[in-house]
Amino acid sequence: MPWGITNHGEKGEEVKADYSSCACLQKNDGYNALFTTGGLIGSGSSGGSREVRDGFFWFRDIGKYGSGEFSVAVIQANQVLEDQSQIESGQFDTFVGIYDGHGGPEATCYVCDHLFNNFRAMVAESGEVMTAETIQRAFQQTEEGFTALVSELWNTRPNMATVGLTII
Image (cartoon, rainbow, N blue to C red):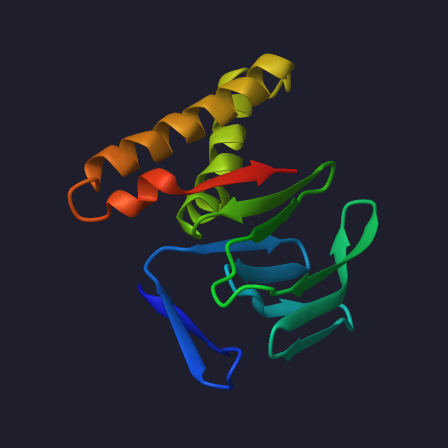
């Protein structure tokens, strides 16, 4: 389902960004959050955390994870935010992804939607054992999937071949 973000440009004009499948939704014990190219859009928590969205700034103070609490903040510098963040938390482990996009949001959207799922599948496939090879295979599968998507959309969206990201 398409969704969009409305921000304000340098001259105060409305800038709308429409993304077809660009969201990371985490469903954790006691914490649900939707992280998008526009930052943290909506969330709910069993705790008393607070969320604020003000123009190009979003934050969520105090979310729960297995060993304590966390907070998230995003400050948008570009009209279209190319970056994404992802937090997946279970009883014994926490996955945090910070995806710094370059040239557009497509690569970060794809990685945010696929890397953790590939990682989880690789761990299950290896008998619930996490190894360096498991992590490498999850990254490789994600990269191959995005490359295949770029090839598939080459005729209609050739600009996707020029986007990238850094994963922290």
